Length: 246
Image (cartoon, rainbow, N blue to C red; front, side):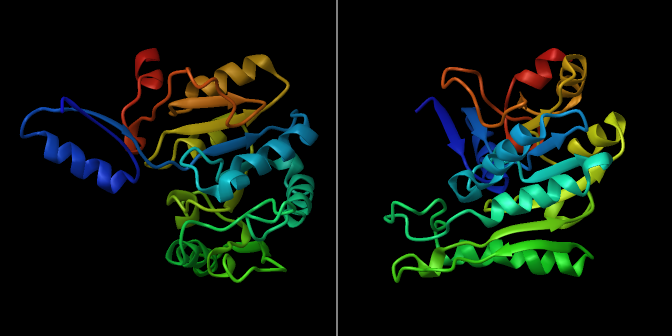
């Protein structure tokens, strides 16, 4: 075996790198993330709200590139959360074998309990629970693992904005201008995926370039050709995009 390719947690990734030092085996790592999803005042709000819901709730939020931090420019600090919460409230949670289900269970009861615990974490640090949408109908098979759809308002330094939850859990934060949102977006140990919504092409290129992230989407999220280069930087693994452009 000449190479190890690993997808998983940052903690495990670091252990693999340490173990590889003995024989200098090549290592490829795709690790955790805490994706910043930025909505500027000039964005197409209809597209941004639907795309942001997909960014964090797709696959029950069990995606390292999930847009789990929703960053909203101050002008829309009231309207976007209201519309986002309305959409999140409409998601049908239930048995994955039911054709009407839009969000099924998490991988295990243990993981579900871990995701739910972040609501308590948010409260302890002064965060506000904007939505805790519990399933209304649960099958006997999926009941123990069905998630809530959770939306919290939090500060950039709070644990819910810094730690990967890996579930249908999104932290909402507001910002004033480009400089502030770039600092917030880059203010975690990760650097895997992120996105931004704006009608200004120059701003799109400027902010995307400033984000320390292996992949940045503009006016969409999680849309990529399977053959496109992919990888993270910093605590998200080994990637080339951000490193080569500096």
